[in-house]
Image 1 (cartoon, rainbow, N blue to C red):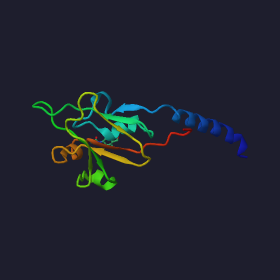
Image 2: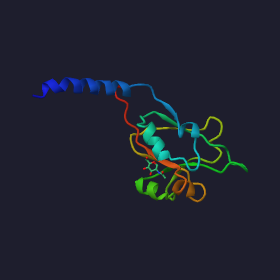
Image 3: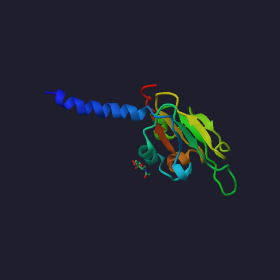
Image 4: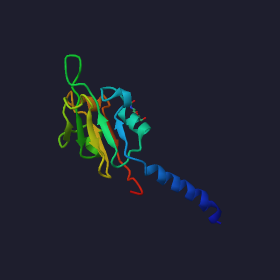
Length: 143
Ligand SMILES: *[C@@H]1O[C@H](CO)[C@@H](O)[C@H](O)[C@H]1NC(C)=O
């Protein structure tokens, strides 16, 4: 028993590893939706994950103006602050002006959860606007 089932499993495992060895990707957060209020980024991240170490996330949003609300990108320290949209210990990654042009690029260099959110409108963009998601980049095998 066992051995006859091992071969297909091994092939699958090797195939999975080979896929993971591909080059780092540059991923626009939200795709063509970019980074805005009311888009479900949790859903987006599930659809477009998993992410790998050295992948680059690009946050694109218009600079603030009469017609454009302010957005930002913060890194929250842990799951609880992410769930509650508590920015008291958050680290600013990109201010409202940094999403223009080619956008703000963040490289996923560490194998740990990264909690991203916009803090604007007193946290409402995080709480009500769904402008938050997390990514746990997987290691790229074979590098
Ligand atoms: C966003 O998507 C996630 C994953 O599908 C889902 O669990 C959540 O309820 C959605 N949020 C809203 C407000 O639709």
